[in-house]
Image (cartoon, rainbow, N blue to C red; front, side, top):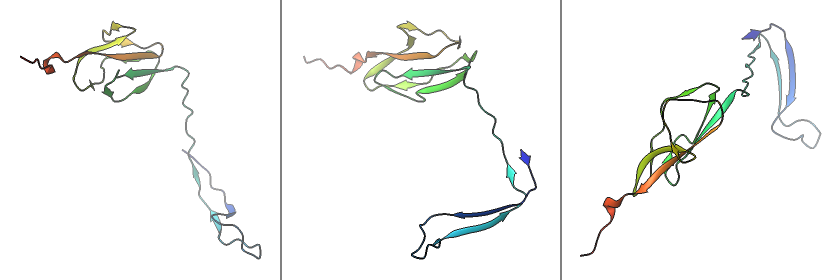
Length: 123
């Protein structure tokens, strides 16, 4: 954090328009001393990639994650879908084998099958 010990006279309007005489209805006069300014580091996202999770009719959280190039994905989120059995995650129809090192954006989709144990047969 950088600091500087200079004095600043601040006169500013805020909140409301002038009254009929042209005077501000509210104003602030302040002298700020020992002001501290924090300079945030610029976060370069050029070497970052997005992992997107498509629950394919189910529910998943998070839906997207931003990771740095070379990130090792070693776990996947849990997803649910009513009346379906989760068969795993896939990319372009191919099951995922962990760990995966990330070097590009990645779209991961949930694979489901109908829960046949819920089917009732009439006799």
